[in-house]
Amino acid sequence: MNIGICTGGGDCPGLNAVIRAVTRHAILNHGMKVFGIECSINGIMTNPPAVRELKLSDVSGILHKGGTILGTSNAGSPFKSPESGAKAIANALANWNTLGLDCLIVVGGDGTQRMAVQLQDAGMPIVGIPKTIDNDYEPTDVSIGFMTAVEVASEAISRLHSTAEAHSRVMVAEVMGRDAGFIALHSGIASAANIILLPEIPFSYDAIIKAMESRRKRGRNFSVVVVAEGAHEIGCEPKFRSSSTGSVHLGGIADEVAREIHKRAGIDSRVTVLGHIQRGGSPAPLDRILATAFGVHAVDLVAAKKFGTVVGYRGGEITSIKYGDFANEARSLSLNDPFLMAAEAIGISLGR
Image 1 (cartoon, rainbow, N blue to C red):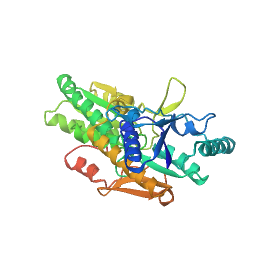
Image 2: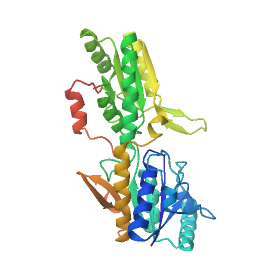
Image 3: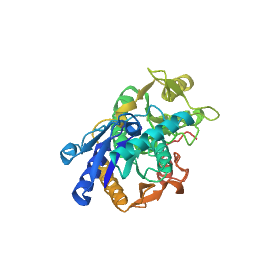
Image 4: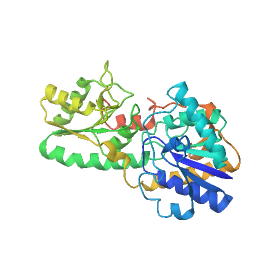
């Protein structure tokens, strides 16, 4: 069999690890040929297609490297209009037949997988692998990239404690996650944050100030606040900021939180926005392991011709689920999440 693999959406640690696993398992154990599709799914929709065969030598030494050797794109979906979607599918199918591919392994989050479904519906066999630092893709409990993002954020936030304590300040750290609070919650717990603000739980400034006053009564004259980029005050919408290209992204809530804390409590408050540092650099060991297991399982699904499925990790097992058996939308933290309840049980304020 001839299989293609592409990485779509935002980059994250572990992409090269999954490319390596797919290539090695496919060649060594199934005698397959592997073709890397460059620049996300776009690579198979262009004329000529941006495709290159991957040999074992191409994936040697890339397990620990960040980014992706195939490149990626999150510039938007080619299916945003019926006309562009029809053209994209026609180009993809023509290139598919010319290249003689039997399946395309699509590594990406909910947006990339929604595009993959349209290719699958058009007749292109697809197997999906979930990756997103946000950890918000429904078919899996853990996505490639999430654990590294938590590790990086936890280390950074832990370092804010000493400067906050030295100056009796409030340090507000803004982390990624879009509309899901997984990174904020897990990194906040791991870094001993005092307050964690999540998109799933609109916060009250009164509750935030109350938590800080409670700490001051115990002689703790500083606080560390972790805020997810999609968090927002009760009755308000999330904050957005414009990039250098004019596109609009979630962000800016940390600045507002710091201003309000200073305004309402008179406490010196400073902001750290971690930004893309969370998705760059070498993957953590657990992400390397997860990416390897996902890549191997995806190749086994291809060999068994179980197309139209997505690999996942649920209940401690590597699983697969058909695209049509879930909503293919982003998920959020459950209010019954055991880690969320554990955070509140040890005195971390969630701003409610």
